[in-house]
Image (cartoon, rainbow, N blue to C red; front, side):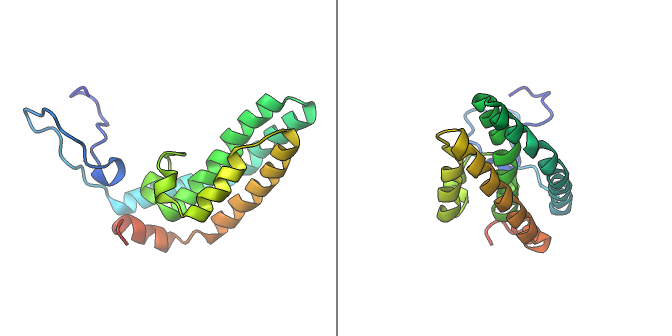
Length: 160
């Protein structure tokens, strides 16, 4: 890691405590996170997802209708599955809201992971359409269930 790098991933609550092999001048220190600032970042991202999710959902359906299965699957993962994961992470593990699939087996409840697994491994275009519809409904269900006071508590006390 270059000393000039602005983001050294030194927020231990987000990136974990690093294993240090050599730090002659003491660069590696836990950088504090302002919980209110972090919550505002999450709120802004949540608002962005609420706006962009319905806009991009049509890309998957359009490519399914055109018979372009590979493109449809790519759009599904990018514009349906990934935002679904983001809102689930905002709800359950907000410090990792933008980590996509990393650590889902350790940070999300097993029944959630099982459901995500079903929505990720899609066999064909017909199944993709069903997964798209199901993932969309789940996305909005999770969005409506997010309580920002609970998210604030998880940010302020990650062990809660």
